[in-house]
Image 1 (cartoon, rainbow, N blue to C red):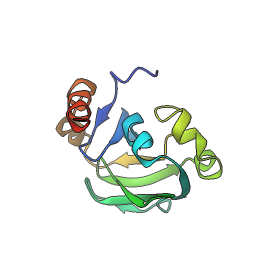
Image 2: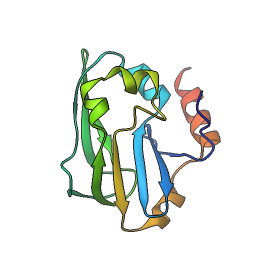
Image 3: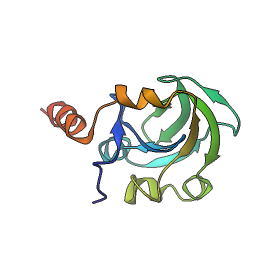
Length: 129
């Protein structure tokens, strides 16, 4: 289990790890379990400008397509080509090798509006019942 204390989470189950002006984004362990069998990941285009809480990527599973939202505003500066080639990374290592894309943040203060791990765990715990 990767330490999630340095991550921030959204209500839509994305996580973000901020490092200076770069935010790495992925989906939570809870989300990858809900999505189950990933069949396709549509990543955002490099250089695309995204606004906080707008759809940036799409993960398709056998069951449905799930929009992945940008936790912060900024520009897409990197995508995880390994995850595009091997979806199991998102399942096995959602907080490390299975990250999805990186955003160069235009407003790093947006991170402060997101949930910490404890608040997110409480949210997902209540979703199970």
